[in-house]
Amino acid sequence: MEMIRYEGDVYRPPSEARSLIIQATIGCSNNTCAFCRMYKAKQFRMRDIEDVLDDFRIARQWYRNVPRIFIADGDALIQPMDRWEKIFNCIKSGYPECERVTCYATPKSVLLKSDDELKTLRQNGLQMVYMGLESGNDELLKHMQKGNTAADMIEASQKLHKAGIAISVTAINGLGGIEYSKDHAIDTGKVLSAMKPQYIGLLTLMIERGAPICDMVARGEITPLSAEEILAEIKLILQNCDCEGSVFRANHASNYLPLSGTLNADKERLISLIDSALQDRTNLRPEWMRGL
Ligand code: SF4
Image (cartoon, rainbow, N blue to C red):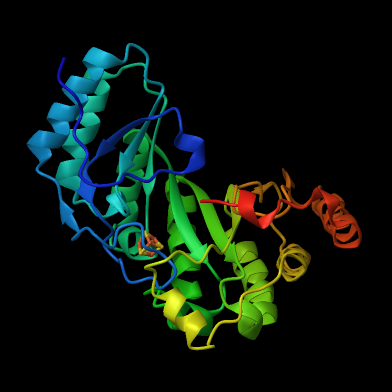
């Protein structure tokens, strides 16, 4: 039987582990972030739409039941509406059982779409987008060459809420090292409060060889945090975060202490788990077990 084709490594959020993944764009439209090397080997472009549609046809031969579809790569939302229309027509006719379609998005790709276009995407089945806030601190975002401001993220969130598209957002603990830690934590908590995403995921910085942040560390611009300092940062984010109803997770493999709950109800419980872990390090994931 024919196989679906992927160019390069394909990345997806942990919650899309069981989803059908179809690559519609190649690489990331931004691709400048100093801490990320996911798509550095790829030049961003739209994949030939006929190849995309062909992959849907091929996947149907392999999978009988597909409740979830994730459209890759890095910023698939940026595709023009005529491509999205073809993709959704293909999903509706070929995968009538599909309950949810998701993709990665940047603030730019959200802000480039009109309110009506976002509503159309939602009506066609785009249920949620995954976005990287990384930090709520503008100075750190600029230092990391993120390519957007915290205000852009808030504005994009408001548009998505208006369209009824859910938001899953990640931030990165330790991103600014000791130098930015306090401002990073306070501003991230505040921006999350303004964004009010349905899902919040905290990752912990992994300094990957080949990512520009390696040189920043070598030059002494970023001093990596210890496990205890990372936990203190998470605590400060939570203390500054007012996100009633948001599902909160810091249980990714990069984290030292797995945490999960629903805000704001679980905020004090999560903080007391952090306090206990700071007193008794036995529950912390050892450095060698951390990963992306
Ligand atoms: S962090 Fe996201 S926006 Fe930045 S380069 Fe990586 S994939 Fe692109």
